[in-house]
Length: 255
Length: 322
Image 1 (cartoon, rainbow over the protein chains, first blue to last red):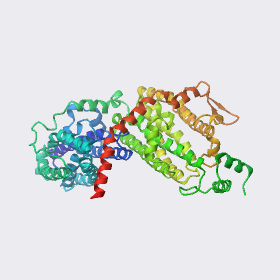
Image 2 (image 1 turned 90 degrees about the vertical axis):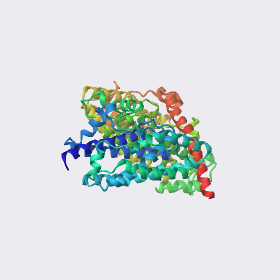
Image 3 (image 1 turned 45 degrees about the vertical axis):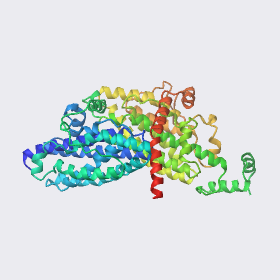
Image 4 (image 1 turned 90 degrees about the horizontal axis):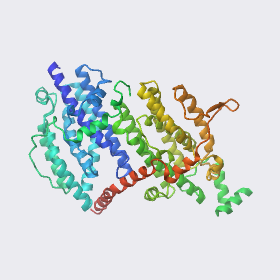
């Protein structure tokens, strides 16, 4: 791979990894507090997988940059400033109620299924291999989060109202899925990664139909201009502060 | 045929002496008692009490460590801790199912917990105040639990015994990760060494209390041992734990918070000073440092989840009718 592509791809992967890390962080906040014990298990498992996937992407980024695969991921997670994270705002929003968390998970999983399908066809083999591996786990996530959408959308009046409120809150942020990742244009031209805008179109059609079938109203807004990965809500600094609090007590220590 | 003591117990418990004698003979032969089999009502009652208490301990036990998942200081530690707390939820689930085989429902058991009628392990009513507490919980608390659970894996009730076999395998990983953390930090930076010393100082005595009161003050032990639910006493298990842990912790340079701790040449046992049973009973009765907080967290999760459970049930009914 060309040097310029190597560098671009590392930035792209770190952004993907940041999405997984931050979503996994939010999912993990349910551990011990879910509505039923089976969902404590399921959400802890989602968190485990998401954070595990983040680790895989950070390691591949380390490889591309010639950094140490063992120490570099932790350096990225624990010693970057909040403004240096490249996750989308959708994943950093507080976990909210069960409707909010499960619906966010569904919206994200449905997009990820498409992205991973495309990445597993990448012309860069190490990327294609990891994407194929992650995809098998992500299909379980999608199955799980997808099952909750009609259950809550059509369950009771209260669950319907909560789902609609969650959708209204999440939908503008979900438009951020259409935004390009760092380095995407060049990498897409080289057949290494898919176009986010292209995936978004498919996602939007599939997801809208599914939500409508679950009794929810989808407002078709155009993508919001300021939802790119360089801007964050006030929730991210608080999250990062919590995430890094122990590691930064003693930066020299091996934890 | 049955002995006079069987007859006496049968009268006390209002059970058929022949059935009771046959039941005890099965246990004596090392057979497992299975859900549909005849059993004395007291055996069923004691098992439901123990198994549900054990399940509640797993579920409440998610809270003290769960609070540190978001703060774990490396990706590796984070993945380990998440997997561990997830295992605890899974153990709670197996155990509720094991109790269900005796006729208890999960709803009843949860209500008993939330109403404050059912107990759970006193150890989870202590706060986790630093990251190193997760290491102390793994090595000490899970280590103590394994001793008790290894015994219960041989218990006479089949479903409980099988659940324990599986749980013990996972608990061994939990103990190992805690041990690895404590050993590493005890050789680490001054911050880490201080953190580890502080964690062990706080968790040592509460862990010794986990084994329960001294045998003389343990009201349920007699019948539990007679029917093969427990095969060893609280004091025997506690002594095994002390003998295992003291040399290992001392080898890490950790000072145990007990000026009377000494090695007894004659018996080959480590002897500790007196356990503060007032503290134990206070924590058990709800007055430990974190009782109120733990129960508030469980009640909150249960209340917040009410509309979700209601919706899932309503949706299931609608789907059935279609």
